[in-house]
Amino acid sequence: MSARDLPDLMPPHPKGAFHLANADAWRDLHTLIQRARRLDGGGAAILSGSGSKPILAVWISVMDSTSGTVLGMRTFELSQPGDKRATVYLSGLADRLAREKNAELLSLSIPPVRASANWASNLPPLQGWTTTGRMDVAAVREVAQTGAKELSDAVPVDAGPPIVEALRDRIWFTPMAEGIPSGAAFALDVLGFLPATGEILVHQVEDWVRLTTTGGYVLARLKN
Image 1 (cartoon, rainbow, N blue to C red):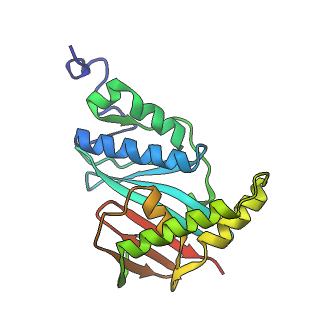
Image 2 (image 1 turned 90 degrees about the vertical axis):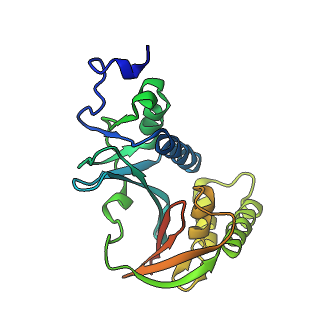
């Protein structure tokens, strides 16, 4: 007997939970959170549902400093709208996504422990975006790989966190195009958003840029 046969023990739409539309969405979300944890094991994510559309938006911070901000965002289909929003730790999400019973029911309960993250209160606008250009996938991948190698070569063996952070800022917040930090290429690569070939759409609103692929979105801005 599977967990699907026990609705009285675990209702398919428990309060404070998102119900993913299918197993593919569940696996993709699990993979995204695993990738995010490799970037920052103590990091956080925003889960944001809509009261009118069966869509879950998941926001992740790739880097945030006085030099700029780079965020990753991906949407997942739900079986029904879920008008909820919470900032939670990646570890709590990973724990729930790894549970077999949750996976069978496709039910993601929101972790009770809320996270505090400065970037979570400064998200980019949802509307008003204008298409400003396109970027070649191969060129973006090269920026990501070149920056990663430069950082690896530049970090001393005994470097402390301040030195590492300063080097990251110098490399990843150097623009790869007007208004677009190199860290946006890094985010597309490490989050698994880069397709094998093709182009990436570039949109802009205020001081934010958005790079759009079939795999997800990276949103970034440089701070003066």
